[in-house]
Length: 276
Ligand SMILES: C[S@@+](CC[C@H](N)C(=O)[O-])C[C@H]1O[C@@H](n2cnc3c(N)ncnc32)[C@H](O)[C@@H]1O
Figure 1: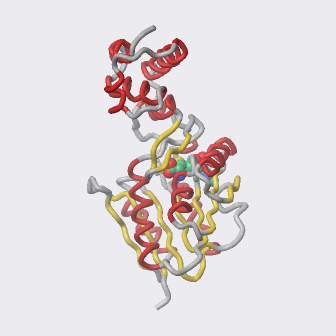
Figure 2 (figure 1 turned 120 degrees about the vertical axis):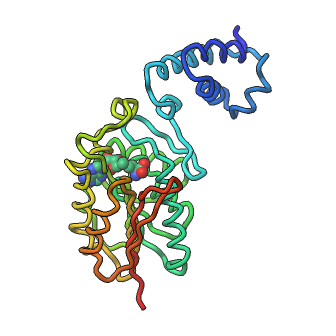
């Protein structure tokens, strides 16, 4: 039987050593640092076989998160598969900023929250975990994505409502918080191969200028907003100006804030309406 160290050495011949360690640690239910305390230990033939299969998938340019089957998002583990986008760090920033807005402006209310284009459910489920008194609805047009979101909600013990809908099409009622990280890539935008070849195109592309989904969501949003509301969208780094214009046309009496991510790029936009 092979040892942990031998497996790492062999894995490193095909993939980055960090990835090899992460895969093996995941298979052995350890964290990558703990793995180093077990270098001399032998692994079972089943683990060895599984490990080499996964190494091969990584060598074939499959993303680590799909191969492992989960990802950490804002402190919770979310199941992911190729039917859902892999949650990104920028989206954690969207959640973080939204929670700050909520804490400051909405802390005393029972909030109705809707996450449009939920994918793995990472945004809506995280908000439900952070604000347990809220009613959270997760919407996606993809049945397969909603299956993943539902699985995550179960595993994380978050009581949410899942709805298969083309954005607002089947959504009843009004919401205080409308949050979305919709598809926003231009049809011909250059993206890393590992993304284009593995992640669902339904989650990535939004027409010629990448603005189609924002337009669709904004065209009906007014019917679904409570008197006091927060709208929070993740946006592409070059979409700040057009989005701000679109927001100003729709939310004529709200406070509109364009926010930069930690790398200084416009990556989020918010519209806040509170009674005076
Ligand atoms: C960029 S992904 C975001 C997934 C997840 N919210 C996240 O941040 O990781 C966009 C999601 O919107 C969904 N979507 C695309 N078009 C849609 C539509 N017309 N109505 C509802 N959901 C849609 C896709 O299936 C995908 O899950």
